[in-house]
Length: 418
Ligand code: HAM
Image (tube, rainbow, N blue to C red; front, side):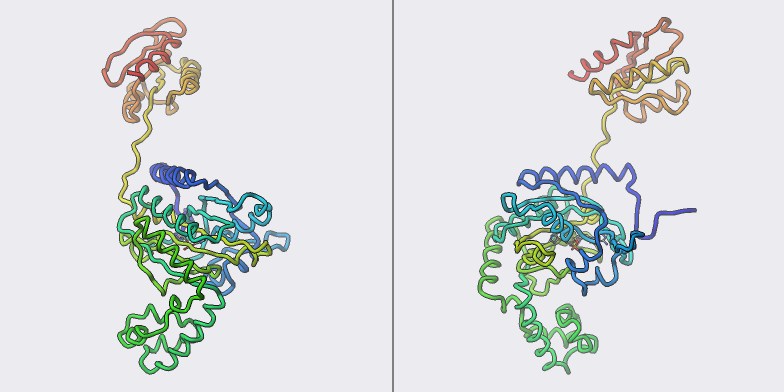
């Protein structure tokens, strides 16, 4: 039996309603702040991600679905949305528009990761990007909007971690300082940390063994090494969040899995989730557009995982849509009239369905009841005699009367207004 590929899932109709509702929240919250929707292709030139996300990242090293398009070009299913948006910004000359350009998106992304709860190989992200503004207000606005979205979606037990990465130059200097510090205290570190000092000195901050923790307590922090203008920028972002009443934890060890970040970085997680607790995150990427051969353009943004938002949300699915009318068939020769009546009803703005399952009349009435139909029109009923006559049943009151097909829609519309 053919099954969905490992790490993928079907969005069944009963799951779709909550996703639609979430999309509606995103549209409302981001739209109100002037963000406009953009969608880019699900695959791009591999080079975009290699250069944009970073050759050394796990994403580019191990997680990309890359294929040859048959014409010798290497394409990759998008693992993330920021590099494609920058590509589109450059390609469409959006730097000529009034700045900043504020965009949002919702679509599927692909990473060949080991699947587990909340981690899939095809997953959906909603994201927002502001291209063309360097202000701290931009970062704070983005964070506030994501907080609002998570709240509207009913995500519980959220935490926001915040940091600043400064510039790549500051980071390189800091890294050397940290490596030297770790070397000087090597005998106190766990074997694992000690063996990876050069490879990934920042990981030492995540270690749990007492020896390493003791050493890391006194380790230099990147936040203390920021250049003056980066430190000022970060202080301004924090002040805005304080004013907005958005709680956050400063986490100098916050590392994101993408290389393009500069200055502000942040991540929302939820304790309602298991190991994959990251609900959404992002930050500033002031050099990415230039790196992709565009004009120097500051930018900032975030993305959040749709599945993780839904997993962390206690909200029940929205109630099913009302069905105003179910058109039932007393005899097969009523089929054309039923087809016409249900179509007319929909054109009049009603939710109307016709019998398509070949059920007996009794079965049709049971079905109409099951789907919550307010009225059932029975057509082709011998009892009602002449052409155009139908029997209309109000399912709430149980009342049933003979009428003409032309009267069905006005009757329901009148009833609707009551
Ligand atoms: P990211 O942190 O890699 O950032 O992904 C954002 C969110 O996507 C995560 O917080 C998580 O909720 C969800 N996500 C990531 N991988 C998976 C997966 N395998 N299965 C399910 N959900 C997943 C970015 O992608 C950046 N482009 C965000 C950004 C926008 N930075 C600036 N602008």
